[in-house]
Image (cartoon, rainbow, N blue to C red; front, side, top):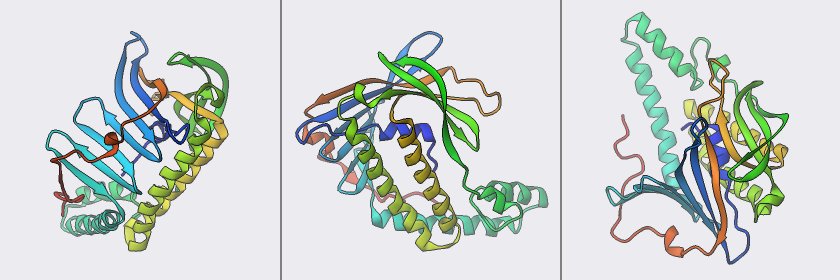
Length: 283
């Protein structure tokens, strides 16, 4: 499972401002040329629980009780990522890689070489894998520029991977948003949940352990990045990896409001059926 830094930062922008009030956040896609703003995600946070709704009206993710629930309104079903599912996923990952390696043995040389290159990114014991499995270095660079997004003033930073800019972050000061004292606590909570998955992968050994180790380094670095920028990214815009140009669209925080949120937002809807988390995943 790969998570881009932009996606991680956006998901982490949640906080509980008081013991009795929650926070509502709207994230939108901004077309820079036309100025058109299209809502994409609504996030609700209250008393340690988080719900993120896709504005397609069909899918949502709820985090509570140290578990993640993935809801699908179109099928009235849900899946749960808890410790048991994490263990199962780690084992399945090793099984899938082993099956791919067995299949490779009977492939023509060119096809086998192509698959080896693809699997090197997973840290396999193949030619060139050691270099491919090295954890990239993530950091931020202060551009010295100012900007605005979602009606808020912000300071521009470039997020980097091995020194190369990957995203442009428009960072608002903590004082401009209510409840920002809880932001880092929320990020640490998300990181702790993710660490459980990484621990499960490492406990399995093999390729899963290698990937778990790399992802652990990724998460730790992003926590450091959030501390370094000293604020909240209210807009994120990607750089094109081949040209270095900024993308035509950006993700913008268009709303951040304190409000009381109905506890039902964080409950599994009546009539929903639980599906196995790894159901339908080969082999």
